[in-house]
Each structure stands twice: as C-alpha cells, then as structure tokens.
Image (cartoon, rainbow, N blue to C red; front, side, top):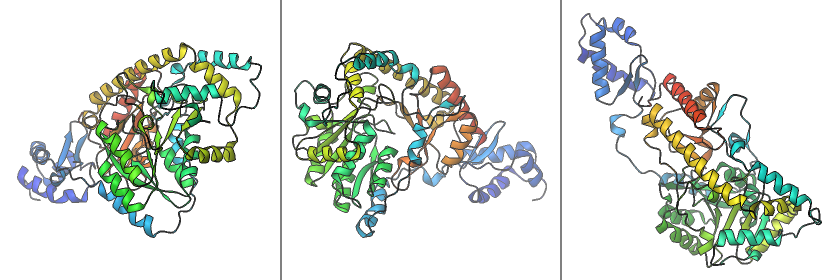
Length: 486
C-alpha cells in the first residue's frame, strides 16, 4: 500500500482480513502494521480504534489487538438448546446397543491430588482444614469400643443409621421410614447401584446438560446411553424434558435439583412438581442426587423431591462424604415400593454390604452436637470462599465474571469462556501457571454448546490462596489473548 495510507483505508483492509483470524487470535503488532501500510503509529491506532468501536477487535494497551470473540452478527442470543436432544434422539432409536465404555478420565479432575504448590480449583472435597477430623477420630474410637463393632451388619445397614437418614431426608412429617432406606458405600456407589437396578444395558438414560461427569462415566460403563436435557438458571428445562422422554422412550432421568453440579442452579418451585409429573406420565424413575444438601450457604432449602413423592417415582441418593471427608464413604438410597428390592439385590451382588465399623462411626458422628456445629462452620466457610472467588474474578477478569451466577450452596462456580476458546489448551496453560481447574467438556453428554471452566473453592486453604489463583488465571488468559475486560 502506498505511503500515507489513511486510517479508513487501513481499517477497511483489516476488516476484510479478519475472517482469517480465529476469535480471540492476536492481530499483527502495531509496529508490523506501521511498516506494512507505511503509516504513522497514530494512523494505525485510529484504524484499530475504529474496528474496536465496531466490536470487531479488542485492543489492550501493551498487549496488542485481538479479533473479538463475537462478531456483530452474533450479538442476538439464539436458543439452540433443543439441538442437544435432536442430535442424539435419532441415535437412540436407530443405533445398536451401546458398548460398555469404562473410562474414568472425566472424573480424575476432582479425584487426583494436585502436584505440590498447585492451587486446587479442581477439587471435589473439602480442604483438610474444613473436615471434622478430630470429631471423626473420636467417633471411630468410640465405635471401635463397642462390643459388636466387628459383627456382621444387617444387609440393609444399621437400623439406627437408616432411621437417621429417614428423618434427615423425610423431615419432621415422617414421610420416610427406615425400611425405605438402604445404606451404601457413598454417593457414587449409590448412583451406580441405581443405574444398574433401573435400566437394562443399551437403554437411554436422561441426564441434565451439563451434569456430573461421574454419572456419565457410570452410565457408559453400564452400557447405557446418556441423553442430555438442557438446564438454565432455574434447573432442568421441563419442556425439553417432556420432549426427551417422548423422543427416546427413556425410563430414567438423573437430576441434581439442589446446587446443581456444575452450574449451582436450584430447581425452581414451579418446576419441581412438573418434573415428577412428567416422569410419572412416562412411566419412568427419577434418580435424585442430593449430594450438596449439607453444603448450603445459609437460607431456606426446599425439601428433596422424594419427600413429596407419593408414587414411588423418585429414587433418592444422599451422601455424607462431601460435608465430612472423602474417606467417610457412607450414603443412602431411599425408595418406595418394589424398586427397593431391586436396589438391595444389586448392592448385594456388587459389594455385599457396607462395613459395620464405618457405619457405627458414622452414627457416632452424626448423633453428637458436634455434627450440626460442623455444618454451620462449613456453611460459613464456603460462603466466605465463594465471595472471595467472585470478588477476585470480578476484579481480575470482569468480562468473564459477568456471566457467573452466585450459587446459594455447593462449592464451585461455572465460568463461561469466549466462543472459540480451546479449553484443553487453556487448562494446560493454567496448570503450568500453578492452578488446577476443571474444563467444561466432560460435563456434557453430547456436544458442548460453549467452552467452560469449573472453579471449585472447597479444597482451598483460605481466601488469599483464592485471590492468587484467580490472578494467575487472569495472567494466562491475557497471554492467550482471551478478552477478560481488564
């Protein structure tokens, strides 16, 4: 281009070339553009400013110019959630029975211990400082002194422990009795038992989208076909749930109505009854995963779906692992009707029973005043950590933080990334910077509608560590050309 190019002509030339750059990709440096167009730095800066005003590029002082994550034509939101069902329903109807796929890679992000010095934003359990370790030690010591501590337990579990779960889940109305409770070796074991009991190999199972990767892994290992049903800020989309049942003929719907993993959503009051009605009309079961009920941040909690289920539609999963310790692998399955016989039989075939010393120690723990005090402590601690992470995100990456909805419970935030972001590359770069995060792709049963990160604040020593971790993430984002709004 001849000497003396105007800012308009430079902007026009760059506008035509933007299609060759990926969203978020860095444009040539200002020095390169000055040499190429034989223009002054001021003229080049004006051209880039014009493109930025059009929303086509993003400029950051000292870092350069980048193609904007969204083009002007993409600003209007389009609801394409129905495609997640449409892209899989035909496969459910026409495909051969699904092969068993035993792959634990999707849940390793929350199980693997991070290397020393790495800030764990990928953890799925409480930090050791938040676990009731002294109370656990005392409970195990008292349990070990019982004369019958090493006797074989009842196959369904200790009656007193089953009664405790019945009161906890059913509430003061007494709607659940001990006979409707089966003690399990934690929540994951309960989910696996429920999937094996309720669905034959090759069958579809409806799941929220996104959802807990552990249930996807368990379903595929059992030869089942997970079918995604999109969620929004109020929980599962009941209109799409009804469509999914009709399209697939599924007989099971797995859901997390309270503090959903990974979005943190709580199923809205008007949808709670509708979900049960839809499943009952389809002749289907609901597996209600209530993993986070004891991880609330304060405030009223709606009762579990099973408490209001008059027809045996809901199979409820409860666990004490999350609020206590990853080593206290004790949970419960709660169900009404003949399905309990099937659940009991599957557990006996798989693992016989939960060891009695573990059940006795659990009963000792939850029967003392220490337990409610511990729950209040972790509620306060998780609230403090949530606020610290939100504050750090809004400070260091305000554009990314703008889409986050603060959860009322649980231990994680769901961070939407700009379209076109390579989750795997970003996760690897963040790990090299000393922070472990969970990428969003494993939380989707089918194609992910957008890139995400899940950031946990449970396995963190304190708020200073949270601020440092978010700062490192922001630095990596800046180096990767991801627009953060800083």
